[in-house]
Image 1 (cartoon, rainbow, N blue to C red):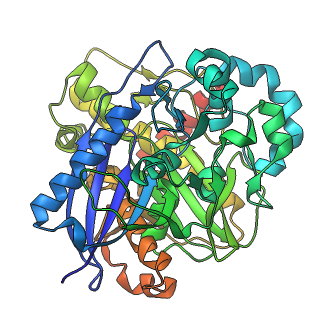
Image 2 (image 1 turned 180 degrees about the horizontal axis):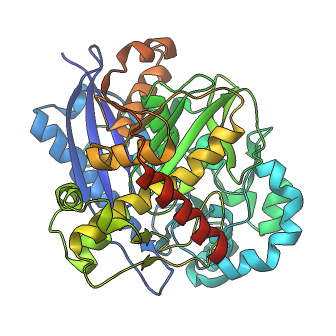
Length: 491
């Protein structure tokens, strides 16, 4: 009987189920389902956890049907997920409130008030005190959600990121675990020990008893139980945060490997191996993965808005009907018409390297002849310029020379965007043949978790699709200076 690996990729706007042939490592099929985004107030973003789990259920059922695969043929499961998003649920797996999404800025005031007293912990977590991270969101839930307060008193409260919630549901409440790539995004984990810190839990007043156990990233987390869409007993053998899974899928398991993922946001990650490097340029020190007790560290840059800017053009301005249309529209704008037009995609503040929660999005430099083609191209340029700020910070921090950047995620299919990125960043951009590296990476990780794949084999599986070399044009030099001048003046 042919065997498959099931990869569950739970993202910000949708969930994906991907099937991988366990022998050839070929992608067999995939299915994605979006779910509703909830915006209670400006700056607040939530997800209904039942919507999320239902999207997982539908994806799995649909991909099995599409590929004509029986659930009994699934050898193991890997889970990857949006990372800093916080879930509160009881020991029966019932959500106590909506999940607070990583993009949510409701804890900005709390962060501003506590930033000075937190500073002594920055080296311990590798993270600034910012609403982006989970600990402040957990604190908010404990302060504002009555059901969570009651559950805590009753000893019935569980707090986690999406990974542990999905694991808990998939195992029928038998396994409440996470791993360091996710736990390192909470502000509650010590980077040196890769365990929950008593000091940090006390600082945020988050009881350790509510948090999942931290395991290696590869190994048996539990087995499926009590589901109506998968049989009991399938091993869940890898969990990785989405950006670390993408790095793994890009064969980035060795020191010096660098990738940029273009999703709802964009995330630039450099594997620094056993070296826990403190950034001098506003980046995050985080965990790539932990395998057999050995921790691999990473530096990361975060741009909160990437593909979400294109969604905004589609859903709010309605100048395109599908996200894929932006490339053709933007291609119609020439350099002359773009001389002063800039799009600043800061809908939810600025991430690295500036960490400004109060920043707002803007389109500037408009004139009477500005039209949709200019807005479309400015959007792509704004994405690339924002990402470039983190790329340059990362190149400055990197202990090893970086000669190119691997890219993945849906937006990397946009050739114009990739060429713009190469031109602004002054470094070749390399796109792989498989761009779904998040789901692909955790599927390979699941095979590592059951000892059916060695990490060294992953390098042989990675294939190049196209390289975007740098085009030297004075336009890009001038636009980059314009961007830097504006950022330094306003933020």
